[in-house]
Image 1 (spheres, helix red, strand yellow):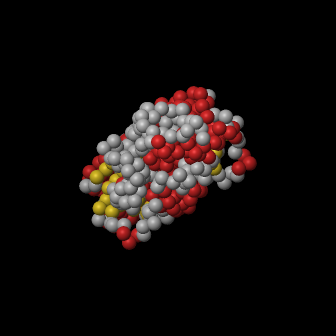
Image 2 (cartoon, each protein chain N blue to C red; image 1 turned 90 degrees about the vertical axis):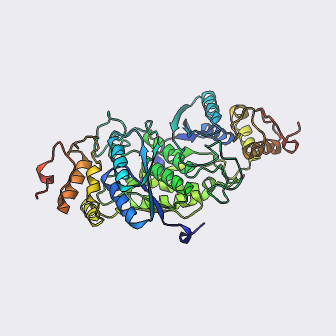
Image 3 (cartoon, rainbow over the protein chains, first blue to last red; image 1 turned 60 degrees about the horizontal axis):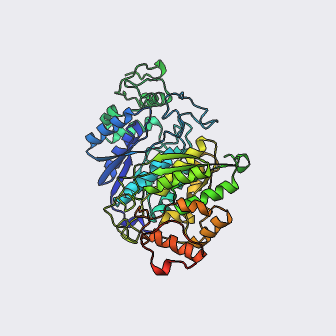
Length: 234
Length: 234
């Protein structure tokens, strides 16, 4: 297996268009000489994040590949508007209904394959286990196992970077401030309901709002409703 | 993590429509009470295997899900007719040009996710390291790592069965004879060139022909050309 010394200085970032992946793109741009992004079109109910990803890729000046992957046969609130967004009930048990089984593994498999076909061996993803929202495929143990699996699949050492894994949402906002790219977040999309202005009520909106609030930085995207406890004072 | 005792008696088989996956379907039908199949449409040059998969699923009386996955951005002879089929040159090195980086990992990820969403925790794939054709993602070490990764991704014990892993092609033919389903192989497709009658010359055709020959059983599909050394005598 080829070791890290021969790996160049390029990376592919999984860019959904959400806050975390946009932050990862800024992180990768500061760390690697050459950066590309890959976005997945899986008929997500919040498909507007694809537009957000396109806009941010333009601003960042990086090449973007969109890969359609059809998950319509796998039931989840993530791709079926008739399934309510809820914190439990997914797979008939304690997982969130927004959990789309196999999604992150499939996306990382394709991203690593795409990277390999371009001679790139570093892949960056914004998964995070700190603000743990119940997705088993966002945990460190999963990503480390995936990295080993893809290194075996490609017969070459792959590195999957997770710069946000142990950060709170507030720390993620502050990381973006340090990277000097807070303005990119204005174009990111987070709301699970796919709303712009964002709904301000779904679990994704609430996490985002709290993160900005705790960081003491205003969130520049628009919201329909923001509950008073999540509204920062400036 | 939920253990095996609560796993039911159902399986999903990855059915490409080739000889190996058709054999796996027969194996699964003999072992599990309820069997479904999943096929992937990735614009493979030998797309006729999808028709073969449909036909075999009909004969076997199993439900079939077709999942489109777009690998067009990942260059390989497997999905780009302008790339010649060759035993080396893939990823600019010693891998076959038909190697599609990330393919098996993505397919297994989606198959496990689809299975999970239906309450199924057993997945069957026809990968085989004996007639090793240079694909790192057909090896035992990869599949075992993938099984662990998907169990972490789904927070539940997944089993990936590989009944052909250590069989020669001749033993695979004999397994099908033992299962009483040799006639299903008449509908399977193997040729990398996507030809029917099969080309008889590509590495996939040659492996298949040798397997039948060594097993002493006639291959009932038609070939354009069969070299004399691979032609069994009956």
